[in-house]
Image 1: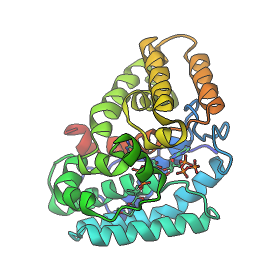
Image 2 (image 1 turned 60 degrees about the vertical axis):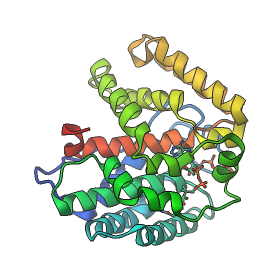
Image 3 (image 1 turned 135 degrees about the vertical axis):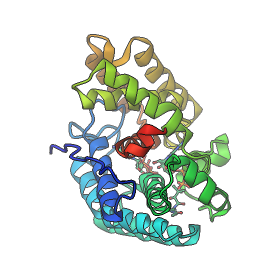
Image 4 (image 1 turned 90 degrees about the vertical axis):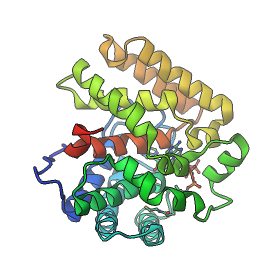
Length: 287
Ligand SMILES: CC(C)(COP(=O)(O)OP(=O)(O)OC[C@H]1O[C@@H](n2cnc3c(N)ncnc32)[C@H](O)[C@@H]1O)[C@@H](O)C(=O)NCCC(=O)NCCS
Ligand SMILES: Nc1ncnc2c1ncn2[C@@H]1O[C@H](COP(=O)(O)OP(=O)(O)OP(=O)(O)O)[C@@H](O)[C@H]1O
């Protein structure tokens, strides 16, 4: 597998919904094609996961492209949260059918889906606001007011540890994308201008160091989250991808996560979202 980000944002502001759907799917594949990513599935190994591999994640990403397309089109038509939710639920169903029941991308459908809807909305209005701000303004209240599955891993972790999870991240306008991932991504490009995979590793580490990831809480409790955050912070403090031998350090962290069954799926989703936002030049001009 070799996924290149063959994407050049057209100069006009309004990107067609189909292109946005294709871009979102591509960003999911780029996230997969990033190694070492602590505990997560990549083209090199399956990390802390027994039920999925890179091939399954890429098939899932392909399955989701038309749904991201629909979400962008719905956003352009001014859809409210009920309509977006119906498309999101249909996307989750298609994902489970394509993966024989494995949750490959539930968090990513939600976050990237809302960003696609915001990109469609922004294109239709011809405005320049960051996508996260639009999600928060347009659908933030409805995201909080929406139905919550009491038995989901995220909901249990939220109740037990008080973490807001994917829902709070979206309702607040994706602060982890704008305040953590994008600055890390841009700084990393000056450290490794010709190595986009290294840039993605550094961005992923920056996210893990700061995000209260409900996947980590579900799998490892507070101790697991603290271990993950401390490991990623130590990688960054040592110079990250600017340090000679960084791959060995990152690989050691990956193996330590696997040994503890830790997987920061929320940070993986946020990495894909940051790649999506970064690829749309309006956000680059006004992040
Ligand atoms: C809100 C969702 C994600 C419910 O999931 P859940 O209760 O399990 O919540 P939780 O927040 O923990 O996370 C689910 C996934 O999000 C990701 N995640 C975990 N922590 C975080 C975080 N801090 N920030 C962002 N994403 C995170 C992980 O991949 C995780 O597996 C979603 O599945 C849902 O409500 N879907 C309904 C469809 C919908 O409303 N769609 C909107 C348009 S696409
Ligand atoms: N490369 C990746 N590797 C692993 N998880 C990822 C990756 N990219 C995104 N994710 C996110 O991680 C989530 C899946 O994580 P996980 O399998 O730990 O959750 P779960 O199904 O709730 O729990 P469990 O597998 O412990 O039963 C998905 O919702 C997905 O969006």
